[in-house]
Image 1: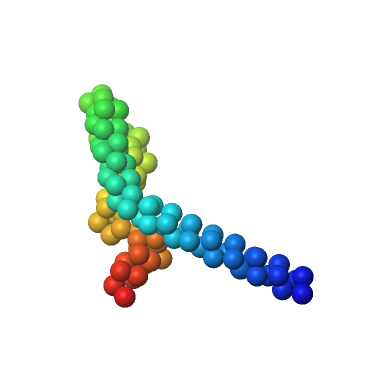
Image 2 (image 1 turned 60 degrees about the horizontal axis):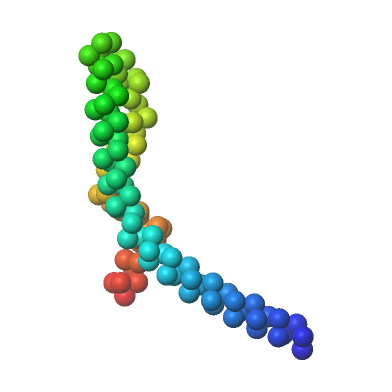
Length: 100
């Protein structure tokens, strides 16, 4: 009897945890595109302020070599702004629940 009561309490705690996770999911999915927009702006500023001097002094290829991480982050943020998080992300879960 004691074990059944413990299982009941654990199930109750899991339901509470699920409700908390659901509310947190809805908060974070709203911010995915906003976060990628802020990363996009940061990377544009980083490229224009730090890499233009390299371009002027050392040439195009050295600037491209020095800014490869900046370009990867810039394109990644553009991708997230366009597509969102994807089917397995929190955005996808909310989209499926909204459509049903």
